[in-house]
Image (cartoon, rainbow, N blue to C red; front, side, top):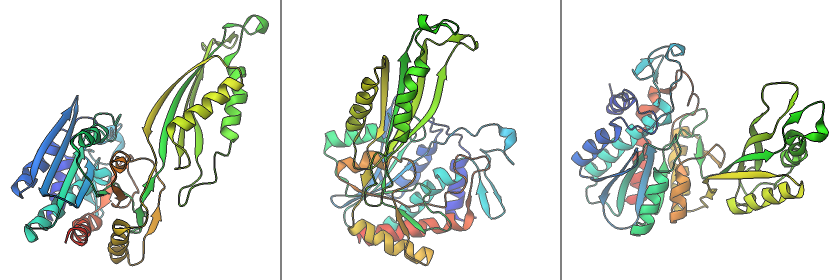
Length: 375
């Protein structure tokens, strides 16, 4: 078995369901310390974060990842135990194989190989891991970034190992992500009997025109390589369960994925003004998951394009699609951020897996990126 496959198996065998790290970062820290890295544990609440550095000064290149995974769901739905890694059909199966313990293992092996070959390299190579990417993302990289801001910690380039490839390793380079803003809307009415609507106030009827307007709105036409901003209702709840009772309250959960035309305060103000215009009595609670970020053309993108093209056999697609990643907390520190990782085919699914061939190629891919940026 290869070194990266061995390490990926060791990580998968630790059931690190968010925010529990289950010893993954201790395993990584032990290896990186042996390779000459200085390791700092940053624990906030129930969340473990690892900051490991080799070298000093600028430029600072960070390999960013997470050791936590989503719950596996019913064990009986899996072909094998999700926390007992198994190689089957040319793929490594287990929760976190693709998202993203495979990339974390590849980061470690690439970092070990790089510093062994170039102990006096320029600048700083760093590895940053969290156990709070799949969860609330409050005490993870968001909190670490706040600490870095207080310390004046500089970051020039950040490579996140999220599974970004589509069909083959290296065919997509993610150069940005949309922002994510979630809202919990409670519309207040007056409960009553359906036969006497004049004695009640139906919050569903009152909210329907406003929700229809929000859903139909074209927020913008997109931004460079970003798609247009989208608004989606994810859940609606109201009623007592009886067909003859007008509900007294309606709860609506919704989310906006937005491009750099907007920021969270502007969207919040826009939606509040619309709800006010419709005369609703409501409470609205917001959760700002992260602002959009975009890495313009520069050294990081050009190097990544060259390296990925070598692996994929053609220049990669450069994209800002997908959900969110922890790079959204690193970009505001002034860093240029990209995402490079294995094929995204089974993440968060039953029987999650990653190609063994891709996994064994990942350390070389990451090492080449590091070499061309720091040598």
